[in-house]
Image 1: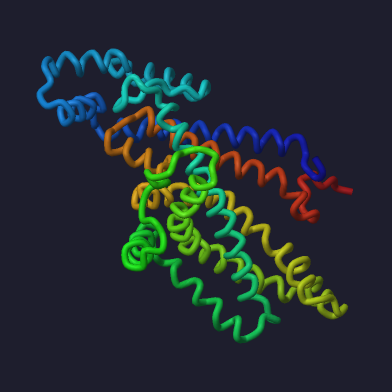
Image 2 (image 1 turned 90 degrees about the vertical axis):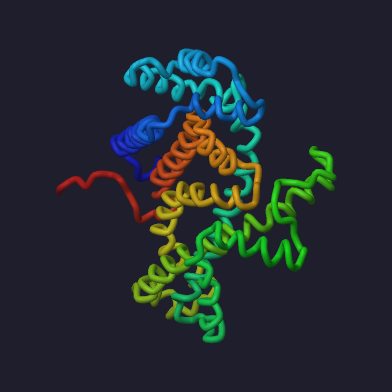
Length: 339
């Protein structure tokens, strides 16, 4: 594993599991601190759908017994940890007897594809814009244009999403406003459906990319300014190497490491920010599913999605930590032996 030591590898893996344990514990505790009762929310949903419900108290009590809500909290917590280890969170409170995973599984591909593309695009565009802003050889006309791309940074994801819906969808009628696809197409691996899905994903994608790329750009600009004064960078320019080679190989490559760390840590916030974006666009992803689960106080679905976010974020940080020596050969985790 190159410059990695066994002790460092074990330390990072243990930290990975510790992070997950703290995260899933908070996911268990926080909904219960609210004092809300998911069984009552279930009954209210039934009443809204069917009207009057007989023996409501008995129904609530039977639900509490079925879901183990009458057990002491330590017993519930131990049972919950068992569910986490098995990736089985039981049944959905709001959609009983549907399993919580069955609520999340159909929405997962939508979010994974959308956020994967959005994260990569926002990072690459932001890093490129920031590097050009911090590079002394960038043409002046480009230096004056690039800061305009940062104007959307201060706008929240969902507010920008509403703006896009108002202008592009409702006024200009260029793209569909909400949903994952139109009802007029048949879902499946066919060209009309794929085209319709891509069209519906454009506005959520733009909303996330344009509002998140500014952070990467500003951070990379500061890192690139620091690289401009390094000896190896000045030497590469003095050798007469091509500007493109100096920019990418000696500039971005040496400045990007802290940005990659921020990228791994920012995955969780990106996912969190996408929740309201998916709600605004009624996009059928895990963010929209989580929003509905919070409204319905569906503990098991909330725990399934939030724990999935925790695991993905922790895994991203772990992988990046282990790949650092490959990204930058100057990094080593071997202990220095005193001579």
